[in-house]
Each structure stands twice: as structure tokens, then as C-alpha cells.
Length: 252
Image (cartoon, rainbow, N blue to C red; front, top):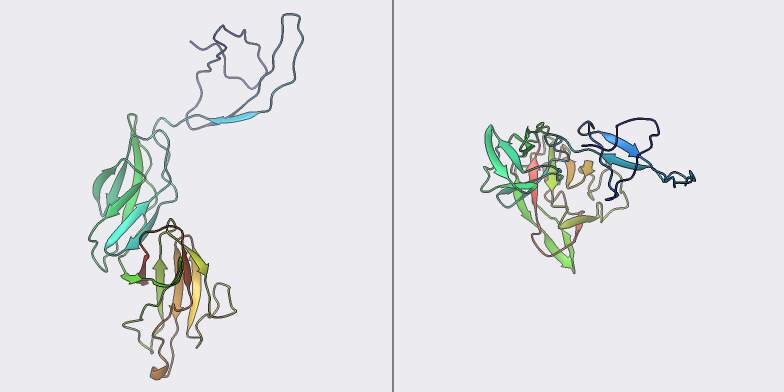
């Protein structure tokens, strides 16, 4: 039985021997602020303590957030932020359900060129939480990074199927647990997104974020000027030993 009542006004509670106050009737997944002061038998009072912000747990797990993916070799690694009050996670891949007790899921031997539809939700004894938004990864070509010095790697993929008569867009994806971008435009003075960064000005970065870099190979009129190594300016620094592959995908 509760010895405290939910209220937005000050209330006095006789402190029990175990010096523990329990408040029931709170709403799930809700933030509350709590502050307290002491009063002795003579009626002398202390100042209120600093407010403490607390949040009650959900009856079912909260919605998954920060769903993301990393591609290496023929594996798609799905990651998301851990959710409290969860017994396991339910992963939907192209309509098929799988379970994971950790906040990650791997698709081995993924089909090259197939765009997967993936979403995740948490499950506990109360039921399933709300699904995350879909992510739609597609297995691209795995590119091996070349080591140029201790813990520093550079990507130099060859642009196969590059047509000088048509601009093409690509994205390179990397595991942020293993790699970080050391220099986005290592061989030029231009560092901003949406600026050209290849020596011949046929390639420009259009977007970048946590674990990905998007770029565009621009249309050129001279076939002899076709870009063969569009990403030769991006350097990575290894955060730990492990895989140094990245995924290169042509965008639709």
C-alpha cells in the first residue's frame, strides 16, 4: 500500500522505520519532478532538496530509436539504441520476423542489389511496443580500405559502370564503432558538404552523417576525363582493431 499520494502540492508524510516512501498510481512512460524536505518534532524545517526528475517505465517497451545499419562484406548489421523494460526485440525483415536479445541483428549472405525493408520493436511480458520507422538498406560493393600509416586508412574504390554521359550518386557506409572520418577532403582545401572535392572537380560530396557519406559523380562530356577513383580523398582513422571494409552503394 502506498504511503504517498500523487499530488502537485506539498504534502506531509510520516517517515516509516524503513525510511522508504512508495508512490503508486503514476502514469507509465511519464516524467515527474520530486523534491523533499525534513521536519523534526519541534516543527523545524530544512530547505527543499533539489528537484529530481524521474521517469516511469512503459507498460510495453518504448519505440525503437536511432535504427541504423552498417554493411561489410556480404553482411548487413542492424543496430539501434537499447530500450529499457524489454525482454527481447522483434526484427521484421521483408515481412519475416526474427528475435534478438541484443540491440543488433545481422543479415548474413545478403543479396547484392536487393533493398531490404527492416523495422524493429521491443517486446516484454506486457506485449510489444510500437515499431520503429523502416530502414531500407541495400548491399553494395564491399571495398577494402588501404592502410597508409598506423591506424590511418584511405578508400580508393574504382568506379565501375561509370558512364560519362550520366551523373551518378553513391553512398559509402562505415561502422562508427571501428572507423571515424579523419579527413573528408584530404587532398584539397575544400571541407564543406556540397563542394567539389576531387582534383578534377567531377565529384562532390552531397551529404554526410553518422556512418555514411553521400557523393555524386558528375556528368562530363569528355570520355577520357571519366573519374576512376572518386573517393581517393577520404581518410579514415581506425578506433579499434577489426574490420576495415566499407560498403559502396549506387543510389537510385
